[in-house]
Image (tube, rainbow over all chains, first blue to last red; front, side, top):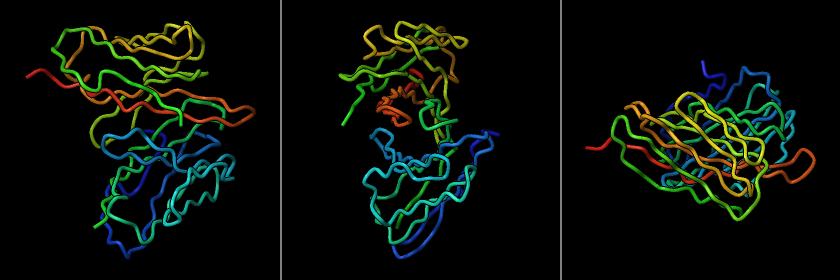
Length: 113
Length: 114
């Protein structure tokens, strides 16, 4: 039990598909994040939610759409993705937005074909 | 944008050896974190550093927050096979108020010597 659970662990989707990634945290944290991890690149912050409000969107293409219905759940809706979007997508949470100890889920390995 | 330079990019370890890696930046950070990531898993937090000059240990791991607040190092003593993986440094830059971002290095990959 890592405290941050992501589903699915693996996802293969076509470029015309619509799918969603789910993240759930059991730590009572108020801030949640989506990161993208590609080979040979640093972790890239995509979105930040603090108390269910989106506080940051790091110039992410609109084909990625986040949703945070409550402090414990975070979704990433995917549609019309490109092959270069294939990566490991990591969810993280922290106690507060300014609290720096972020705890990560196991990630969803996404392959776009 | 802000960047962390993490080195070395990769290294081979033999069981029992000590290992050292570091991160440097041109920017000042308020916090340094060290994570380890195993294949197919998310990063796991190893050590958090909050004050310049702080030296913190977690078992065989020791990390220090550089006095200039622009660097940090991680040492692993008496390495064992399960130490292999990718180690990431991360610096937290506070933009003021409740805003800030974690900036990650590119990682140091530890492998076992053939």
